[in-house]
Length: 633
Image 1 (tube, rainbow, N blue to C red):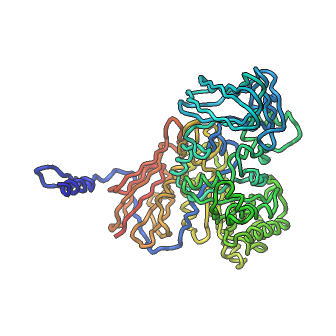
Image 2 (cartoon, one colour):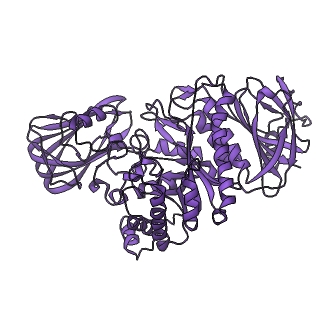
Image 3 (tube, helix red, strand yellow):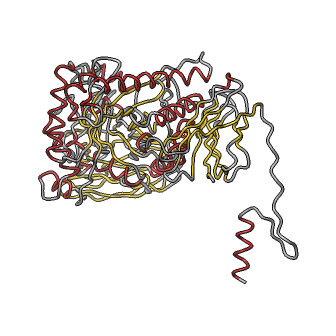
């Protein structure tokens, strides 16, 4: 009986009608869909071509306003380690009641402790949901602290030096006041925290789960412009003791307090002040959770080759080395074994902290690379490039032995007047030019022939949240990388995730206070990362109507038995493709919307992501990205 049940289940699963007392029959053939156009597809070759680096499906993260804190990092309390004196007008996010003081003898390294005599309080407003929250604070002195989170209230007795005191509270939807008051004695408070109880090592689990679904293969971190002012040793060890620092890329110290106040008004607190809560170990825990390869950037702007080598030893050194032992002491006995390292960021630009001439920078790059490789000779290094100037050429001529990849960054022009096909070309023409420049340079400089391009920041310019037309351009870019797999070794979309309130950020994912969702670009990146094969192949779509301007790429598995055809359709026409007779569509993935400016939000998707198993016909919608995963033979 069990065997018969399994056979019937298998027949139903295979699309065969099965019922008691009748002969199983095949379902009626699917009707051919009506489409505006019908094109023939010729697979010129299913022999495996160039191997496609899986690293082209990568992502980028930076400690930039709206990207890390409150989005990936789950902390809800601002200025939790009192970088500013609590209640300092225009600077501190804390409001005060009574005579609240400040003391530089604190638990964290470079801030203040809040001194609360009896009757005094500090408070701020945070956004909560109807869920459990875990919190804590460090306190010293003799007395009692009352913690209030909305309707929740608890009194906690404090005695002695700085000790950690924990509490839990159930939140309610909406803006909620969080208050700490001294009800007896005098108390010093420092390093307060409030996070959703389901956080993963301090990170928002909903955001991490969305990032896992995004399927980015490699993540570049921590920047970006940020890295040129970042001291990595500030971001390890006990998070509650780490110093808060100015985010120098976005909040340099002008010495003008009013200027600081004005700039703090235009952004979130942690967009300006870096608490160093998400540091090296947290980033690597994130990569482990989402299943991504870490790609670590080092500071060549305001740091030293020795500091970079120390970071390599911290990440890759044995536990009996100086910094390997420090890592082990911080809870990770085994080496992280990070292979991919980015030496510097956009050092050709006068906007970069530590910018210098290429004549001087080649020596900087070599000094950093050699110091790092002395610690671990197996690391792979990306250098700062710009092959539209002399920068990449001089890096190749002077640093080839210390380069595995050369970084090229592109933020393509986005113009509302562009039709979708022109919007695509704004991106792909620029990328194509840089690929051509790279080919010319490695032909002229044989010592650099092994160096591949890392497009480790690419996106459309920052002029709005991601729309369907952006997704079309990013998918066409991936097609270009696949077609040039012999020289393109990595790509990192910029950026993986932003807060949805960052209205001009072209992100793959967006986060509201308690939800993370896909943008159209995120859907495109996910479709490629999950469905493309390992090798490039060749196909031709005979477009009898050239206005459709289809952009496409064909990939094939090592054994030639599975292929994926990815097609970008920027036109308003539906198209039926005639594939080779010995192919079967095992999966169709479609990213589509009704207009080029369609976007997604926490309220719902204007751009859909639809997976169809065993599709009968290769039909593609207008304004769409469609991937057909095929079995051949």
